[in-house]
Image (cartoon, rainbow, N blue to C red):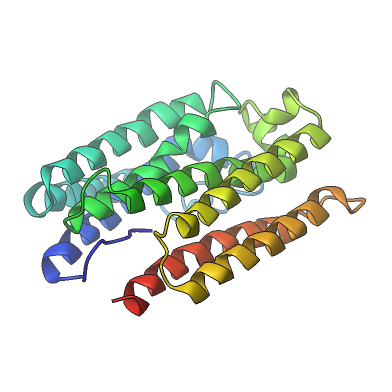
Length: 260
């Protein structure tokens, strides 16, 4: 998700297209890097390369086209800081994070930077300051949200990840401990979204109250799905977590139009 600090113009939409191409290329290249692991897991074996819908050569060619195209657009049409952030994020995601996933169950912690950096890319592409409070708070929210999002997958598919050769949290903690960890990180990301209201980054009062009410409902639902039922309500929690993040993003976008 890319948040722009001002009214969208053609000059700001072109860099956003570059960010989109770069993100798409990095994701495609990641699937090229990890297809032997994806092939071993039921959750991922239907992806294009493991399912043989495309060859590894085709996947590499398309990912490079997208990455190079995205980087060229950022080089010529975006501020230098946006181009540098894009290059750093590419190295961090496809180099460091992808390698760390095979070494530690905590790779998602440094890896979550790859979800936060695009906020700064979009913000600077639209003419905003790199350290603008709006961008910093939103990036921090996304950073926090990604850890429990991934660890929810571990609760559901931990054995598959382990069979594929990845270190997983279930090797280090009990299921109850992992549920507690997920609850803690989700509570932290919930608190970060409330800070958007408290520090008046989200201005419209109706949207502000909606965020607060949503957080209360989300945390109650999370506690129910994690601790108050006999079996883990994975699908309910996962859907709620994604909808929670989506609502916060849409609220920030709506706020830009309602408070102009």
